[in-house]
Image (cartoon, rainbow, N blue to C red; front, side, top):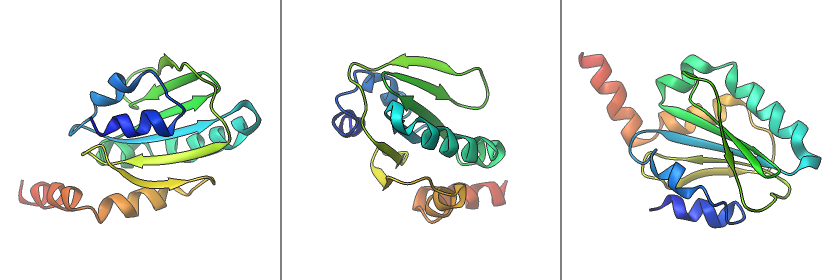
Amino acid sequence: MKYLVLVFFLSHIMWSQNLDKHLWENRVIVISADKKNETRATEQFNILKTEKDRLTDRRLVVYKCIGDICKYYDFKKDAKVVLVDKKLTGFNVVLLGLDGGKKFNSNKVENANVFFNLIDKMPMRRQELRNKKND
């Protein structure tokens, strides 16, 4: 239920149950913006989507939320639309770990390596890499 923190953080978004499905399965990046900051959100998303292989290798999914609509991307299927109950303000990008905890938060557009470097230092990711090496 740690994803409930994100609900509060993202202006009481009513789709927290959609995030719960990722607990222990996926890391999550949430990009949120109001209409004024849509360009920044799109820029952040475009930076990430060019790294599809690296995203899927790290079990990352992305929610791009602008105004009252979020799109969920797992880079395997078409995007899914999720509605939110309040308008978002400003621009923000958040990384959530497999445990649902907030690992990174920024109000500026970030390079994809910022996320990958953080994830690659996480104990669970290091264990994943050891397991891959032993296979």
